[in-house]
Length: 341
Length: 222
Image (cartoon, rainbow over all chains, first blue to last red; front, side, top):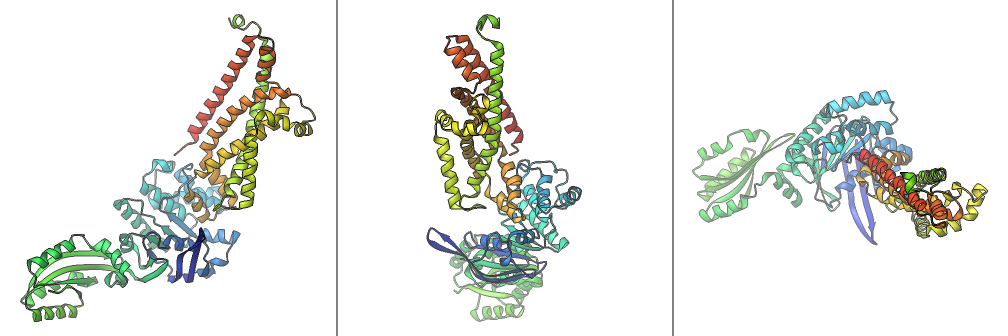
């Protein structure tokens, strides 16, 4: 569906050169929700703007639905953009227009007849749950409602791809979840391919099928969300994952335990999918004569299943502890030894 | 009672002069609005990073605006006499003042338009581009509507300045309340005529300000 090959984007800024996107190759499948995560300045904003031609790459190829975007100009590019719509962090609505008129704007651009426009706008307002607010101006809406208008506006010309530029970053957590649910719903109902960029792992975890992690213009890690959660490779990925798994107190608790019983062994267990629902721990305690302290536990749900972590301190005979870890491994629970005694 | 306070006022002449002032102000405001928006848009769109980013056009337009904004109005009128003669075949009557009024005010208003356009959120323009909008669509459906309150309050200020300029246009015999106040009032030491002319100018200014504020308020949905 979307294929980026060796894409570079350089900016010239006061005689110094900035590489915003550095040799990115990735493919996005039709109908999937693909997330790009990175800190600000990682190049993800530039990357998403390459997809609808708001930025042109310095080199490389960008194919969308078999169409090479870099070769498009003028009317061809404008027509292509009607099928690749975009929503924004700050919504970017026209304040001089009502909700209805804002949603109508892309239809005016596409030259849709007035009667057909009215009908389409009504459908879209129902779809995003803004019925009754048609005549309101953006200044009278909350952030979440504004983003709903943005989404309705983006869907007006029946796009094939929806680009989300930090679409939930300006919203509170509850509204973020509501907007993410709406995006998931649209993805499932309309079969729309969604590409989103964010700096929040929560967004990736909640709705994405696949994720690419960006750092300094490069994609450093890419894969299914669950796989990346389960075994992150790059340091930056681990940091992003700790956004949603760490409570922050873990380190302090571990240090404390270390002091209390210095002979224990701290291990971190990762449970995936069905494993999260089985009593592996109870079995462990019953089978082996060791003491088990629970330091921290956490379950995150991703689109493809649950993912849990549990930090334990095992105190007892060293040989037995080794056996216990072997038992866990045999039960497909991933273990990682954090601190030796 | 009014007759008592203003014994020397010839009301027919006074109304005629008011009519001329209104005529000059209205026409020059209209053309200043159109020309100023054109200049402002050109300055905005050719500035770096914008849709028609073009250094040469930008610099030339900017220089044109700055030069005509800086020439004192009274000198501009005189400088434009040959141009006006070419246009109207005569230097008499309110029409003769129009070229100088418009050429004096449009660059001034053009700067205000530029400032108004720069206030528009860049994201909104980007959103319109992402929808596949043409530049003309962006101008008429994004830039102008989104800056309209500032454009209207700007033209209100400019229009009031234009009323003041019309008074000076008497120098070239354009008529209006300024000419009347000078020739009939000051030159003949009839203070009541000068006072009446002043009162009428003030009323015109207040009405323009009121209408401008009203429209600005109605347009602003922020």
